[in-house]
Amino acid sequence: MARHGSIEAISLRAVAREAGVSPTAVYRHFDDHVDLLREAVEFCWTNFRDSMQAGMDSSDDPFVAFRNTGEAYVDFALTNRGQYRVLFSNRIDLGVEPTEVGLEAFQILVDLVTAMLRANGDDRDPAFVALQTHTWIHGIVDLWGGLPDMPWPDGPALFDGLADTLRLVES
Amino acid sequence: MARHGSIEAISLRAVAREAGVSPTAVYRHFDDHVDLLREAVEFCWTNFRDSMQAGMDSSDDPFVAFRNTGEAYVDFALTNRGQYRVLFSNRIDLGVEPTEVGLEAFQILVDLVTAMLRANGDDRDPAFVALQTHTWIHGIVDLWGGLPDMPWPDGPALFDGLADTLRLVES
DNA sequence: TGTACATCAGTGAACGCGCGTTCACTGATGTAC
DNA sequence: TGTACATCAGTGAACGCGCGTTCACTGATGTAC
Image 1 (cartoon, each protein chain N blue to C red):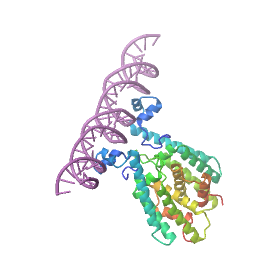
Image 2: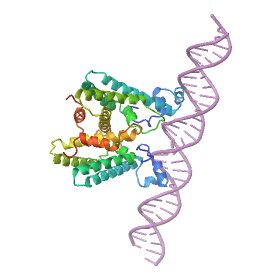
Image 3: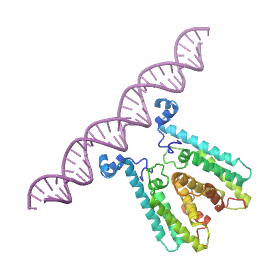
Image 4: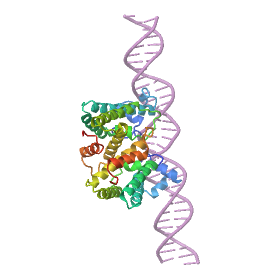
């Protein structure tokens, strides 16, 4: 997944090859190709949620925790670009996929934003601001990772700009 | 491309089929598969640039033009999702691809932002604010188009929030 | 006005490839009596 | 402690498929003399 950066490119035979096993052996553990991909996506979500949770838990100060979570987010997206794309730029339909663990990850962000707004006496809607934060940071890492040739400013500048502009800094 | 939403999924044989022609006939017009894809991407960039230019030209008031261009952007991304993804979420390397026309499109945004900041007496760096605008709006349309099941607020609310937050409204 | 020839868009058969999936099978490990 | 049997992870051959690409070819259109 890291190598291909796209879920469609993950063939059952490639997985078997990687595991040093014959293609038929895969059917001992997964119903079929789609089932394999579905479990892979689930694995990515768990990975991602855990990264976010670690950022969240890194400090009692919500502003510090927010910055750490943001760093963890960018880090996850750029390091495990394949996994990140599977989660947020997935173009394949794997059936039900309620991605409960994905909603958990988003809830972490909502909680962080809630704490920051409360600390600042800011009465904006936390869910909306969290959505703004997520769409923006997603745009940053997705464009950055996808067009590395563009003349990008350094990462911190973009992230600082985001936090400042959205007023997610201690006031 | 509209159907597949991904450049890798566009096979030479599928294009030939769509054109009602044998696969070999494609070689009369393109060197090979990669050459075909390259020209397809160029076509998408031109389409996109023209949409942005139309928004830019729609008014002499930069704030009105900005809103129209933003609408054109979102419209392009959601209507021609396949083309949009090819431009901004392209994971395939087609060789050189300087995408000069892509830079032209970004320059349109920079010009709009420059005009708005000047009108407001705002001394922020137009290129940086334009980049902020683009990353954010990309994040919005990419997540929105990719996860249509999420409980999204209406489009205008998100775009208004963007313009307000980035102070790209008449002051 | 003819004739010879080049150009050009297209055809169909064939190739080798990787794919998902099936089939009948093997051999090791656990379990019941 | 043996023996019989079930379970389970794995194998290799084979299938039909769509793919990019090649080859030799056809038939219409334009052009030079």
